[in-house]
Each structure stands twice: as C-alpha cells, then as structure tokens.
Length: 119
Image 1 (cartoon, helix red, strand yellow):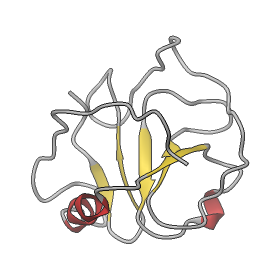
Image 2 (image 1 turned 120 degrees about the vertical axis):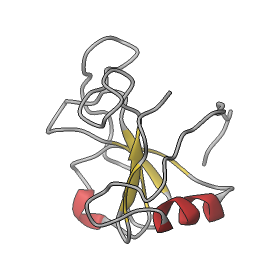
Image 3 (image 1 turned 135 degrees about the vertical axis):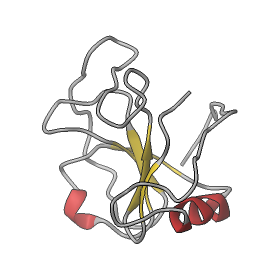
Image 4 (image 1 turned 90 degrees about the vertical axis):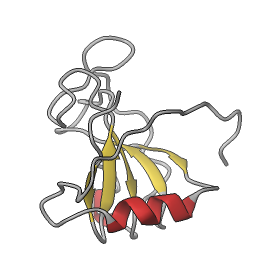
C-alpha cells in the first residue's frame, strides 16, 4: 500500500512511501536512493509525473503529479511521465487536499499498472 496521498491544492499530489507509509520514507527498487537522471522534460504544464526528493541525487520511491505549472521545480525534480488519461481523478484527489497536505479523506491506490508508451 502506498502512504495516504499528500495533497496540496494548486500544487501537487504525492505518494509512494513504501517503507514508512507516512511520507517520510521510501527506497528505490535498486535499494536506498538513486541519482538524478535527465532534467530535460520540464514541469511546464499540469499533470506531469516527477520524482519527489530531499535534494540532489536522493530519489527513492516517492513521486508527485503537479496540478499547476511548477517551473520552479525544473532542475530540482526529475520528470518521468505525464498523466494522459484520468486527469479528472487527479482533480478529485487535489480537491481532497488541504494546505497542510493532509487529505480530508483517506486515499489509497489499490490497482495500478505500467504503460508501454507515455509521450
């Protein structure tokens, strides 16, 4: 189970803490943290999927989807995808958020998958 989604309206929804389930942990499938990859893809539109981190080269399992253009994150967080379908679900999750990041209701991802192509 992913930790309850951390949601801040007009900013992002975040999840993926597989170790502590509370937003402070997470480790990559490679073990521990891994280095930043390319910063070529930008946070120049809504619904970009990016790695959450605690500084350079500290990627683990946490990720976020931005709900607004977040250009200030360019060069800080690696973008690795984009929500192409289901953006209305992202909007619903965003509306459950508060400025503290705590959601008004518990949010749990129960089924997910891998797409072959995202761009």
